[in-house]
Image (cartoon, rainbow, N blue to C red; front, side, top):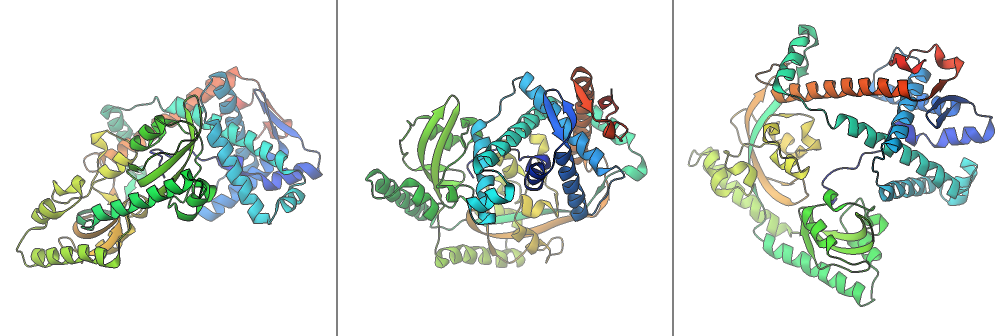
Length: 469
């Protein structure tokens, strides 16, 4: 909740633990491939292939390739990336890996009901389960970081986007689904200052209870913190670099000593108190309690009443929507632009600063991922030019607000064009270039690394022909 950037999740291959682990206990497994210093077992290939088929069945598509050959190639690619990552000394967050392992182990224990039941099902003690899982998560994180290192250097220029577009046949041009351009006027409760002060006082009281020995920090986090990612772990976060955190949060953490509890810290996510547990190099290990301002029904209704009055004025042509947004909206990102909504808040959240990536056209799937579904539900009742009734919603950080929206334009489904859809074409061209660069890099690394493939698989269909030497 306090991270600016999401940590990459482990790929499917790393989560194939249960069935393959049990198989290895009841049958003599076979090494079917070796890449660098890493071997791949037949049971791993079988389990990964099974999950590939299951995933595709759920998503509704198929592949002409033998799933076992496809699974083996994916696993070999992962092993190569892992080995190359160690050769190149890429940096991974060991603390985050251990935290992810513990979270997964606890989930498995809860699913089985107890540690003895989990050990009986997996035919091994829990510390062995942890170690096997740690090795897998570590391997995948090295692989992820190595691939990011390769593709992260790839850039693209306008001429390449144009060449990519012209290289596509008319039938293969991407189809851009229906898009929406809309404007908004937002209003936070007038009592926000008072609500923030109430939140500060609650956290100060918790801090005093911990310092005086009347409560444990982790117990208060479980009871009161509103960060769903850490509350059940007593507010504990995996060790993190300051650059990964909200700037205000990181600045406070940097000044702390192990064991110290911070004063109240305000970040873009709300209000926190922090307990620094340990510091190893650039990594800070800590707990935190997150609270957000809360409002009474009357306080929230007051914001709705204000916007209801604006709706009547706009509909009676007493004031334009654009003027009302400029004078009354609390959204600094849109009020100067007639209320027209862009993704500037999303870019700020992810610490992106490229102004050319700012867009004002939103696909259906953008709502719910980045923009509020409340916005979409209100827009679906409107025709272009109409405005909604006032409604209660939240911004992307979970802050309560009232809002009205205006449907400016509906852009019908169409084939992509350079003039109308440049940014989406640029994104596709960049992804295509990154894939090409990675494939070329991978081929060179395969040629320079020891690779053994069991005869059973040597005649299989591999996308990269360099695997079979």
